[in-house]
Image 1 (cartoon, helix red, strand yellow):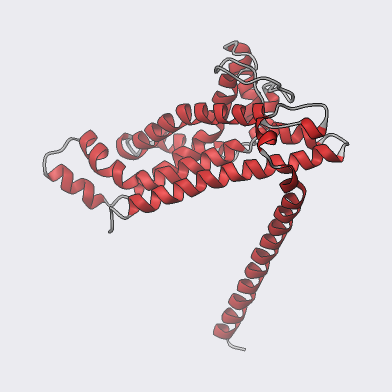
Image 2 (image 1 turned 45 degrees about the vertical axis):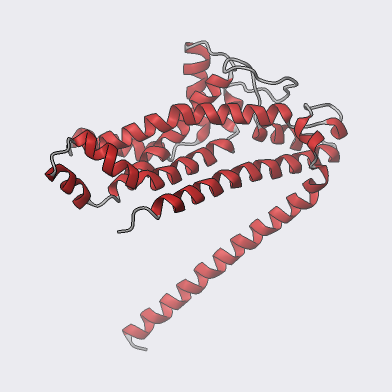
Length: 285
């Protein structure tokens, strides 16, 4: 067998292994989704969405957890998105290419791989104890903002880097300042990619449990949060609480809450895909 034939055989073998791994992963995911749907579809109702948690499975709902999730995600987006995009703009458009910049970039890449529990410990010490925000929605949102910032910065930088340099040079040639070039030329073109990174970052935040449990988020909340300093719970913590119960009724409620969380997540991703498609149609290179 010649060298070329051996390479083609190894390539086909690797392609088959990769295809088998992909199919296996999809089958496992489909099995899990079907199992969750089988358990949870029966509990989905308007009463399930509008009722508070209860010690009795047939009366338990996700109202407080759903409202807490909306509060936390809204504040997380409010804090993380402007800061992450601004940091990406500075690093990509303004920062000089020197040793300090490379060190910052290295640390951002490393922070993206830090376990989420570490951010929970940081949030506990900084926001809960040092700033005395206690077990509030604000403390949880700030903790999750730290968690998603590296992802958001990296995705936004990639989107800015994908804008053709010729577009910047043409704007500079017409006498535009750097900020005018960024604001009117670069950001509109890069916005679909930035939007995708934002949704990916928030999609990770919406499913996090460990950091919020670490800062002391409650597992049982029977009231509506009315402000950023109120105590709270979120859907992942509510699911964790129900799964840990021995009653089968709570397990079905947990499956129903998982379906609601998946629906919220898919809605976010679907909106991002729609907006990205609409915006990309304006700029064809």
